[in-house]
Length: 380
Image 1 (cartoon, one colour):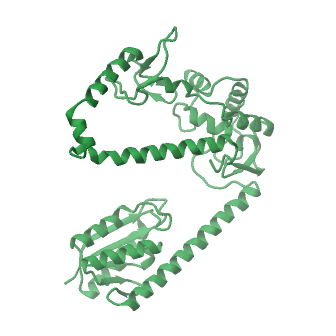
Image 2 (image 1 turned 90 degrees about the vertical axis):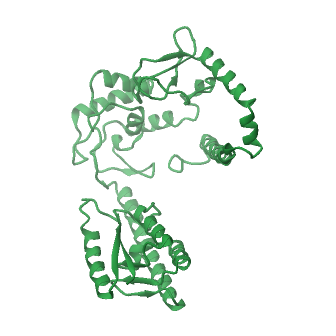
Image 3 (image 1 turned 45 degrees about the vertical axis):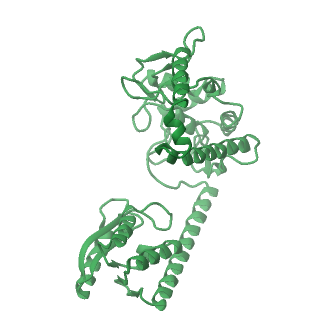
């Protein structure tokens, strides 16, 4: 008797009740019973799209169980539940070939993996599913652009700060906060300073939490607060809701906050151990922050964007000297020489450094390209 695994997937399950996958499981259970297959495992990826390329944990587990021989048959409701990417279908074929698996059944029609005709039909069905997904994606994107160009509201989720739940009516107290923040930032005050002030005054965010610099920056950069419709970072139309500030103010704020010359981390490069130290009391990463008189120091920071305890502060010069001496000692050790020559265990980590360097180079290149205005904010 073949040992079967049932795979069920649904792309969208906003309520989280798994009603769609439950129906798939019931139909697959009946099919396996009719075939005389013993169902030994069920694999469920709920609210996960196969088209988007997102990782499907239970699908990967299914492949692992096929490779190990734990199961030798697969039951699905329809082949498009299993794959919507042709490359995934070919990977599935490879796993089945290497494991000697030939049993694949679906409620809507079986596929014989043992012959070329069966695989040919599976490939056709996979191509059709991909075409359907492409068409759906194109229609959704076109609809989103149409709504944006008409200035209409789209989407749901948490209400925007400054507006009521209908996303149109201005909430007076929050609107005044937005106007104040816009004036202060345009006057030259830092976003961090404004956030600190909002926290001290007890002004809550929409979720009731403390203000973060990125949260405030996103609000001030948005076209929504000036009654403009935004699409992929670009202002495309006058919105159907009223603005809290003038469009001219939004233009000035966006120009100010996207200026490549506006950088807040220039002094970070003066600190050798930046992002490498942790607080011994709370475990948070220490940040670089000079003391009075310009003395460099590493501190456990608290406040906007920081969740440290604020109780640790270390003078940078003495700490860096100690670490440098320790590193030089390590560089002169026999263990490191063995690792560099390929005789130690540490050699396996060397390729990761190359990957890290390449990734950092790409980030720097992207920043330079945006600074030269060769790409737009949405492309960034």
